[in-house]
Length: 426
Ligand code: PSV
Ligand code: MN
Image (cartoon, rainbow, N blue to C red; front, side, top):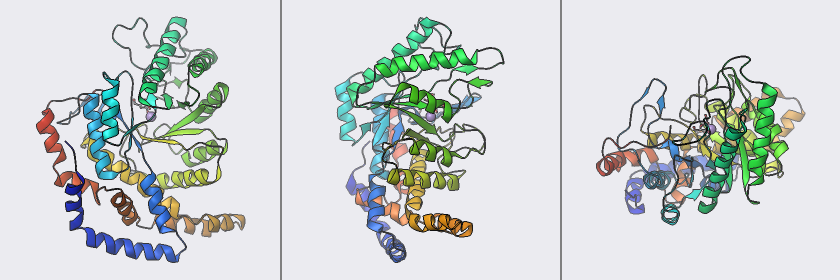
């Protein structure tokens, strides 16, 4: 299924007057406060977030999985789904592939399909947390950290394969997330596990093309419940420094213990030029992988405040790679991703409204009350008309969810693919 611009225009026209009124009202207010509204809208239009190839079908928990009808059952259909999301939101202009779940059969055909949908290939992700069919070695007791050299070599070789796959598609980065760790005290020698991981990552890094980046993701627990080798940003940062200039830390919002100050981590990493990538999701308890902004939208805004500051002031940090990393157990996956994209754009827009000069001034005067007023003044602004305008300018939908439903996208996908089509991935 394709969504053409005329269809969207017809749907948009019905709400054009209301949008124009809202936009003009907000635009006037913001301009009076000294904001450059056009610049903010342009930055929103330019902001693109990669969609993971594994998040287009229903996710599950260890207690079961409730499939969603019309899921994409191959990479072509996944790209088609991202194309639909991108047509509506104009914010999903990239895909992040997980290997070996999504190895292309025909590289040229996949590249052409992606290009036709205006989609780039973002970071490729390796998988050494599951055993693959016919693999000689098992990752049950770890991959890059394993005590067995043969296992480590297999895991290193897999990562190099992933780089080669990504290279053929135009990707420029590899994300490594390790499940390695231990579930019981005494099971692992912490120092050996860390040392092995460091050496293995260096071997992978040695195969990285010059214009590529290595993103090292951290996570405190799960699937191991006593220790994880790369459990926090400090460990990831240390390993990235050991590897070299092309290695960076990747922050996944769900990979922190409760109440961690993620915005401070973001700020520190950007100051040190080591924030490489970002996985967006939301959570109440652990790595819940819920819709972005559904639980803690204010935290997301505070994180974006640091990202905006860093992008403006830390030229030592490259432009980060943005990706959604969520799971959809009960919602239509495409609607869930559309909601996540909206929440990301909203937090970004609000952060762009913060009067950074006034904030610096209030901070230097230790005017704590004023600092809070500045932050929350931006946060309380309803920025949705700016998001709408950013989408409209690129030919997207005023309201992506409403358009998705009006166009009966899911119904069409079920008709094409059937009720029992199942997506590969988690
Ligand atoms: C692990 O929880 C993670 O966040 C990593 O990014 C994985 O690659 C991804 O989820 C999908 O399993
Ligand atoms: Mn992740």
